[in-house]
Length: 289
Image 1 (tube, rainbow, N blue to C red):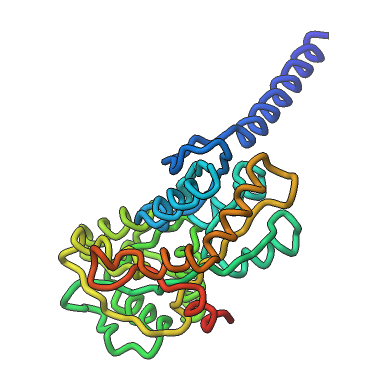
Image 2 (cartoon, rainbow, N blue to C red; image 1 turned 180 degrees about the vertical axis):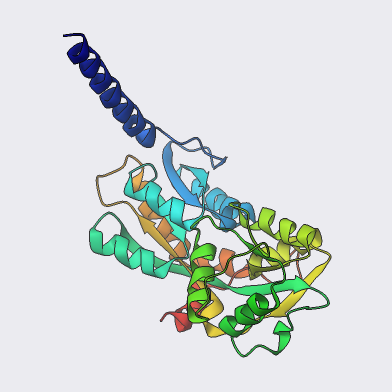
């Protein structure tokens, strides 16, 4: 009888633990920042466009037009996709084409809209110890880094950048490992700073490099130009009726794709930097493959 009672208690504890974990998975995620002060509230998950200020520019302009308020959840592409799947956000902006295709096929994402692009640069120590300036492709550059076993920073966070990095290693037929391969599990700007501190190579998006390169004075662009390194951004919204702010989010996607929204993307950064941070959807469309 005692053994049975203990077993029942253990079973109840296990069930309560599972319920607790499920409840935690569904809990509301607090926004990193809020843009606009209207009554039509929607949640958007993305990474670098928020870190670099583009989201604030778009959110403020849209908020005034539609009496809206955007709650930005700071997350890489992988985490953003999971939040959309779990109905924790109304929309996402991601750069992960294969994962986007899967989300659409499975039916938990809708309204795919190409909104713009940037590209990936492989930056590294100014002395270029792995000699990647002479690389024939991104995969060739990675192969040279692995052969030289010089420090390389990986975000390791299943973000769009990390997924692209792993695709390049796959193209190079290399599984990276060893003390030279350093995983940060952090966002783009923090990982770029770590690369500078470790005198390491790192694949950063061009927007972050243009805006934040002052934090990495030991590094410079060592390889760019491979078409495979062009980085296209898609917006996705939750299916109709699945989240409270979905309809406002869908209107925001329409705004971003409109001439007004596209001009904001095309011109963003021109007033602060020697080049804009993002390309518009017209430019990005040629790199869809």
